[in-house]
Length: 259
Ligand code: IP8
Image 1 (cartoon, helix red, strand yellow):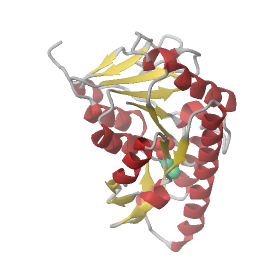
Image 2: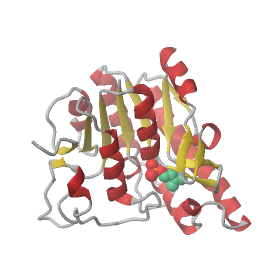
Image 3: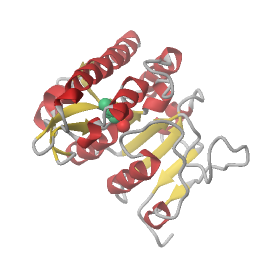
């Protein structure tokens, strides 16, 4: 089993409200089919979630009732993106079942308390492909909070022990400086001690912590047996190669500090 996170930055234009990259999304689904691997897909919210969640401080939980219309709108918007992902998956012969976190996940203090793992495993054993995504969710201590695709991946990895986790992004990997800088280079390997000292640039509104937080959660996913990669999904063939275990341009996150 391979866990794939289709990042919001690759399937949507994160800077433009509700803008999906349908061609990229469909091609990535085709690459999943072509690989012949068992894949569980989690996708980000991109411009369907982050812009409004940021403007209404939804990641901070229930501060006032004025946030509730935004909570409802974000849950509707991310579900709209999810429907497009489902359509793309179905169109290439995959068998997705949508499990929206707003309905299935319970958070506490902004962390996942209950992912509903039993339900996920049951769909997998039926031969279907559960699909989860960045969403709003009920939170025991904050009323509601944001459940990000990366948090889902972290939690899901503990439940289904994937052999590999692939984060599909819109850049070639973690860059050593702002990706907009033409002299930036891909950092091929990131280890725990690198995370605090690396220079990260926020280009767009991201309510779930940006690259540093993503890297930290990726480090939590790594085991000596489990590969964890970030690749550029806008380049045709890279996801397919990563799923097949071939060497591909990207960043590998690893635990071993002695290498
Ligand atoms: O795009 C964020 O999920 P992510 C979810 O996976 C919302 O970080 C609603 C902003």
